[in-house]
Length: 263
Image (tube, rainbow, N blue to C red):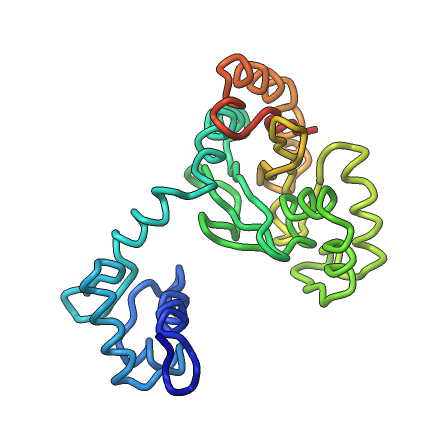
């Protein structure tokens, strides 16, 4: 079903879902209207219908937020669920060694989308969150996925705007080419201060049973010499975790044949 301007009702519903952010998970109808460009009456009618299906829910103050039913439906048949479940034992083992952040990211368009993150009290600053995104050129996970991705993706990113988060971000095509040229031969991305001056990201590829890179697993630790050595020292432990995961046949469950290996 389409509206008079040719836009489908489904497209309008998607615009409503996209209006919610991690920073503002609950919105008034007026805020939904303003963010979507829908008339208030239209937004109110569509929100009411989405609430009736449990896809949105209303708070006591009449603000609306994403409903549990939407989470249930999205999770039930999510192609990322088997990957997340297979990677979790590796992530927990690495987290025990590193003690800061460990995160799993996949390529989605021209960005890295984070499926899971483990953290710790008083861990170093980290801008990523579950279901959050970062540009490929600035993050350790993104650089791994970009280096192992198709050539046309690399050229598109290299030819596009490259936001600079810190003085160390590879924000020119020449610098980014140089960084990417190191990732595949050394087997990991090493990114001191690329997103925040206080944080160091180290990421390596996660491969499927055919050897194709399907995700990146990263640690985020303080950008300090002693802790950098500790993060690099996780190599032996993560190799052991990879072998243990193989014996438990995580590959046959649909995902990971080669886990995280930091250097």
